[in-house]
Image (cartoon, rainbow, N blue to C red):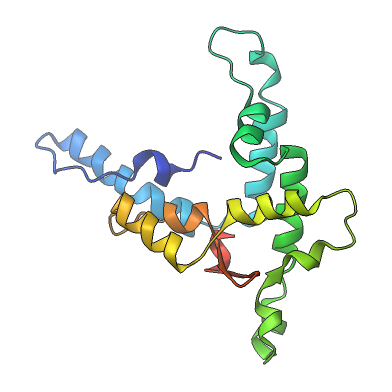
Amino acid sequence: MLMASQLLAVRRPKEAAPNLELARRICSVLPDMETNGPQGYHRRIARSLAMCKRFVGPFRGTKNFFDIHELFFDSTGIRLETFFPLLFGCLSRFLKLDEQKKSTDLSDFGIEADFFRTCTAVTPETLANFFASVSADATLVAHEVQKRDPHHNEFTVLRNRPLFATNGFYVPIRRIFV
């Protein structure tokens, strides 16, 4: 959940000391490696699940513990137990890229909330919160870019909201960010 580009994507001046300059260069490459690395979406989801479920328990009750489930819900209005399956379901929509390339039907290149119509346990409000948290329209993307002023290898704006929203239709900006 904490990707290298979010933590290290800052412009840093060249360093005089060789070891510090090497560290600066490594930090400048890490965001690209995280974004363009060989990891697939299933590994990223598994990593996030493990961080949220397996590794949190031992820290409960300690001085600096914070409840990520509660913070996530307060921030998005979605329970993590619901978010991950929705994310996985959304990603499954974009797995057959070769078939999509052959299609001339625009609806094959995106997803609508109706995709989840058979999931009766998921309320329309939860779906709206889900798509609001993973998508952005042109106005919101432009606002985020202006606000953050990202440097050339920072993709957090695209990573944070990997779906482009237009009239209730959501298209992946790039499959790697989904």
